[in-house]
Length: 241
Ligand code: PGA
Image (cartoon, rainbow, N blue to C red; front, side, top):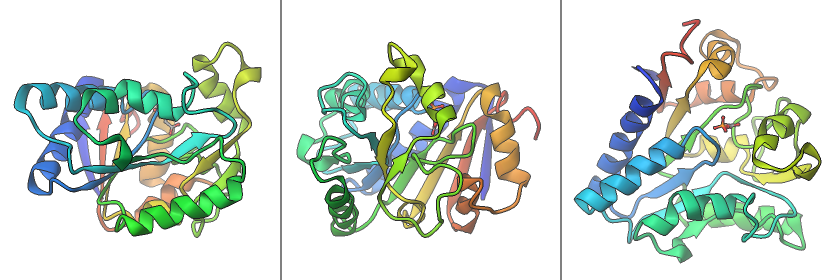
């Protein structure tokens, strides 16, 4: 595992952005694994700016997102479909047909999980997966206790995850109770992983990730089984390391 230490959130976003742009330039039809949340927003801003200034093209790039709330339509401002369009896709030349996100509004969610897992296989797997980490060590919406062998599945969101995410909703009651997420085994299939960690709120989780045991009680620890993980963290997140 490689650790890149950065001064702050902007520098973390820049480091991650440079790695991604390099990969796209050497493999223009790359399949990117993408994440939502506060962490990758700066990275997405960088990719948009870099695309506008240098013309790096995403015409052949494909993307798969980690997760989506269940019960929210794609046009719902709290859906991850909406987040991705607003924060990235609308500002790049990527084809909307090549951006994939689980459909949390599917009538048959079990079937949707199977479809999504097959889709990832059909795309030939993820070349480069962007990840954040939850304060409880979750990756995607894989909460503590999720088997490392899990594939795309329906999850009941942990209360602390709902509380953490309620900042985007009018109230905690509006935060969905369920979601679809790529499983831990699905994530570990990615050829390369960038784990972004920023801020003091994540310092304990990062400490546990770096120095703790590999255990299903701390989902991110599964990444230690992967051969090609780069952690890009800022000073505040590295407070205890
Ligand atoms: P955040 O979420 O980027 O909004 O902190 C990360 C996560 O919970 O995986």
